[in-house]
Image (cartoon, rainbow, N blue to C red; front, side, top):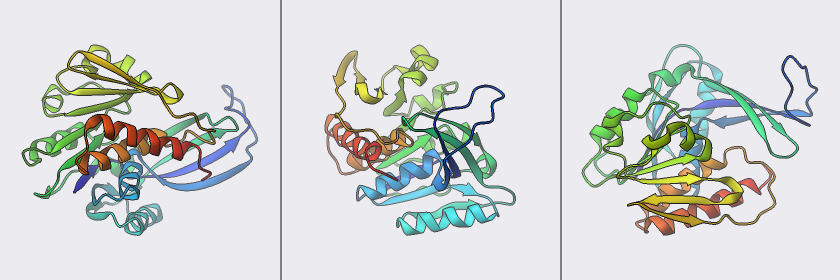
Length: 261
């Protein structure tokens, strides 16, 4: 089983010709409402790849919280560890351009209350990110059964907790996050630096392995990193090698960015 601890956001996605300049009001083309949050997106991606997935997190008492719980149910993700707390759920507002670029503002909301809950004994892979409190991630790391693989998607980048990193097996960051973390991104664990159309670099044991990306027609890059991480977790849970799992994750991400949503 995969256990994902992470954020749940109700996303408002506005499409426009370009991102607005400072103080500019820019007409948009249309608006869409989506289930999101890095944790939620990654859980659904892992489930879409055929994995058995449980989710730990929190939603608010608002309508958005109810909608997100329904999305988890629809994807057959076990949500027994999702708390429902008073107040607003997490949310984000994103602007997506015709070229697939986007900018977003994220509000934490109920995600501040996320905790792992009771960790099932049959968890083989755990997946965490940085949109929930650091204490929650550390609590999960400490509660994992021996031999379970812990994947940290250090996004958004923040100071690395040495106690957490001591338990991490695979760190996933993009180029910007790797630069922000600096030397702290590289250690005894395997570090995967994703580079979009330029593929990825796997840093492991002092050796760097470059893996090129598939050439696809990009419709939107929104959520590509989450699709990659969810597929990586699913492949690792299936027992394949890290190199094979990364190839599977790249394939899933390529299909994600080239599929209309």
